Length: 613
Ligand code: BES
Ligand code: ZN
Image (tube, rainbow, N blue to C red; front, top):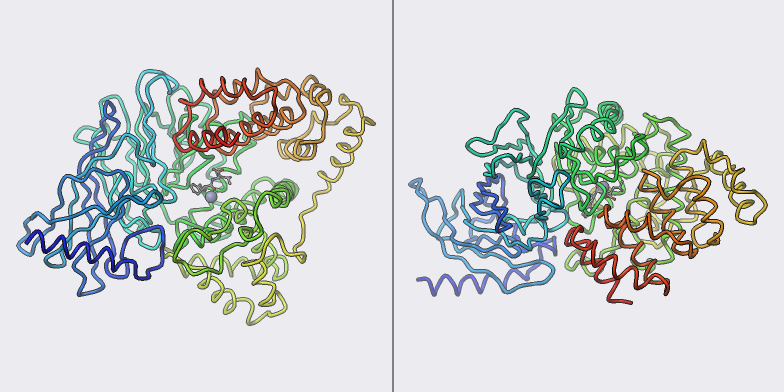
């Protein structure tokens, strides 16, 4: 009997090479879909593992299917049970496929019938790619350990066996046991009054894709910052975090005014320890944030606007596979600027957009032409031809902005709201957006964009020549001053930088990167104390330009790299240091100290930069 089921499983492994749309998942969601997930897990900090079971509720589509295929990565599976017609849990046989370095292992469960529920008992590996387990020394208080997840894009499978594809949505609930003195939060309904006695309980009533599953555990305080928002953070950081995030409700209201009601009830945020490898992650009801967004003057809160915007673009309407990533991030980048405009006015929004577009144009040189499209024309059978993930942010936004400018907001805003409304809680492909675009905009107004221009945006390299570039008068004035300063015609002390907002500094520093001399960088530093800025977007650009110019910034750069773990900053800074023969050895010794402060994914990227040298 067992032999026969194993043979059937092996056969199913071969057959699943048959086409189904998401090449990064083994799941056969054409046959069966998860509708609900229950996680019952215990967090064991001494072994850096979660253990317990996942219970999946299933909706069978193909009546002949007898195998359930789930994604896993480094999971240790103890046993699998299915719920039989008599309401009893009975053992089911299973096997794990051989390892694929990108996708992990398919878990194949043999089913004598189509059960409504399965339970998988498992434990995670200490090296689970989604989870970072931190020792107490890596936290602010130094007293208790900390753990957080980052599931997007395909790491949820390293902490739960599931259909790890954005094409499948499910509701979820969880019960998590954690050591005393710690709080657990998840991307779900969080009870501020909970004590954790009997386990921390969570419920997510709206269906979400697997990449939005999230958990954090640590010594965490909570402070309300608005009628439907609270911030969670380590106790030593809660005050600064709450102060930085006071505009949250205004942002939610601004987004609602544009795209309709916020559908997730609460919008809470957690500020994580500095090793959080990205700026922010739009986990529903609980955005995860880097502490480097706390500048003290709220100058980096467009990050919140971005993660909040995902409540419509991404979380409500989700890319059906990672090929269509621009539907998540390009749309979100567009919506972010609209929110920024509502809160901070046209002038700031235009500056924000110009900096975004100029950085996009500057990034093109390093991206192969074939990767510069919004999406590949290749069928979705392999992820190898997926396009560059960073360019789709500004380029996708630019396409929407172009449509908006030509249609006018009176037409475009309801159009975009309709896209979110009509596809709410669904996963969508680019073709579905193109169909919607034609039916609801271009059929009636063909002059807005021709098919060939639309194709150029979607499948062509670079930014189409027809695109309008943002042009802020304030940044134009600054360009003139910067050019004069670079030529030595305007003394550093006469730069009117005392009144510059963060975006002006970012624009100025982008414009001198690779051009200013060591002496000029020193003068800037002496006049404006750039080495001491609390704004990390400014600090990053200043440090980068200094390393390239050969101006010695070891002191502030060492501090920066020891305290900031955000990949976007850390990786290019090490790369710049490695290009400079005088800094190579110093970079090596610094990294030896800093490495343990970084997230495993950041470590892997920096390791790679060192290997290439
Ligand atoms: N969803 C992304 C983060 C992400 C993307 C994680 C792909 C894993 C794979 C998030 O919304 C994001 O874009 N964060 C940016 C924010 C920035 C554009 C304001 C970041 O972290 O830099
Ligand atoms: Zn995003």
